[in-house]
Length: 313
Image (cartoon, rainbow, N blue to C red; front, top):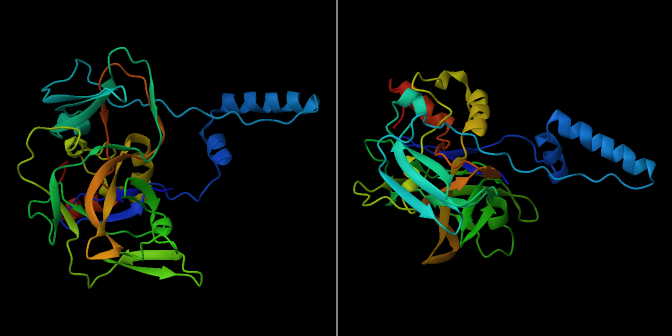
């Protein structure tokens, strides 16, 4: 399932998926993730098995080990540490390394003491984004506002403690017929083929973080994560494909919208807040803090460039 990107911007939108690749089978994804040496070893094992009259078996590739920016002299300007004992990780907020150190604070991750390795799958709700609420308009100061605009039937959303694609959530018999603020196209069997924002909708489309966040915790720490795919020098003109490739390589997190059932119209799901979510399977083996990146989206950087602004929010 593709995870939706969260565009943080003045009037930003949740738009394209993290990955525009065609849907691949599990075996195909495993093969693509293997190194040349692993592929050669797999081929050798397959030849030996076939020679013995057996069948070649695909060896599942382990999730990649995260290798993010690491401060050479340890964390500077440490603000807080949040331990996740049930996972074996520690999240920390300190001076960011993004953009040559000019991005303000950033979000870092390391293993908890006594933990050797932690592997988590794509789609895990990693932490809360921020305290706030849905509003009719974006914050005039922009920055951390997250818009609600779904543009693909494959886009993922959280609903009633599960991760769904839009198509599955709105499938016949699911109990949910509509997503607030959107228009859908269905085939003859009722399956959703496309979804797009309804330009005439007058509801709250923007998640605006509260000015007073209180103490940082697992519920609001996600807002501290910077986009590691864009430098202070800009780069929005590089194009969406180049940005997307860079983001997949550098950013571990993506914002996924959490929906809730409308109490007045139970068959309608409405937005509640974005959630900082793992965009891909990943293994953490670092005892030293590494900075975590979150995809802001090409639209965010394009709008900043159009407004004559550089750098991070």
